[in-house]
Image 1 (tube, rainbow, N blue to C red):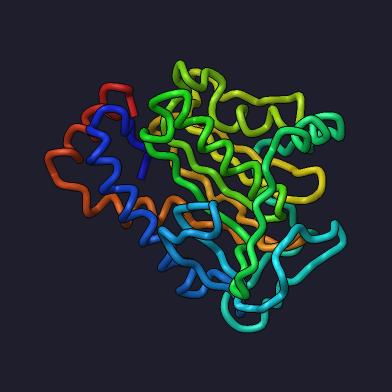
Image 2: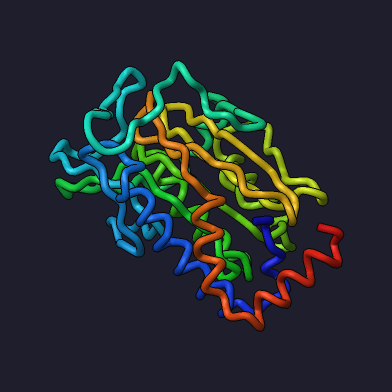
Length: 260
């Protein structure tokens, strides 16, 4: 199923779809995608980090960033995490610059968690409410940066094109803290997907898509050397089937007008 132009419908309609998509993603992760010892929950608070879907480890190791040589994934039972010998298949990978990392460390609050069920990864689907004003965009970025600094990996899915409060996109606002190549989405491919590997100098794995394109699978890192490919397209399709017919007609006619 192609990506729809969700800017054509009300924010409440997307919110309803958004909630269903979160549920489908949670079900897919807990239904065999995640390795043994990991589980996902939706709409959970973790300290001051509020994410759509959390990938959690059931162990009791204290939270905090892992060293760059660390690896914790035990793929026996449950899903199998892909190891670093098979890099994520994305269009672009960028690494943080050391100078930008130093700049970020000076002005960013680091949030630590003490729960035994510690957060290892976050998945965020960006709703219009996170982009409707400058403060909303900054709040989103201020949530992402401390997560990465704590060693919590992050996958951001943004189906809406950049606006006046974020003219180069959400990823660029996050990445200006870490690197000089901001990789803004183009006018023809406004849908941005960014998976962040939270090492000392983070890495970003990027895909950009057009309205009408299928959603690619994206990596969600579980530690510094292993990830799972999140089935964004199939879970999107499953959630879309529950959208009211009147709004599906608006979305599908919009794609037809765009020649999709």
